[in-house]
Length: 96
Image (tube, rainbow, N blue to C red):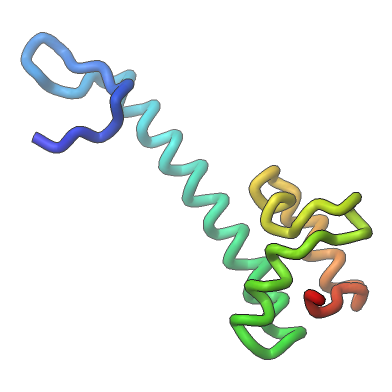
């Protein structure tokens, strides 16, 4: 049997409980939303810079407009719409 997570509760029969499965689904959904948000920002920035490598470097570079936080940090915090607006404003520049 595969171990899905160390905090998954097993029932008496060795099966995953409904509550544990719901918690696992919620974690998966949250991770999926973050991955989709990261991809959306990367795609938008690739449109500006033209290359995946440049967009990836930009994602890891601090942004002055956001107090030195990186776009990756902002996306992880659920602020992808602010980052997309920043890109759309024409203020996003290549990482140095």
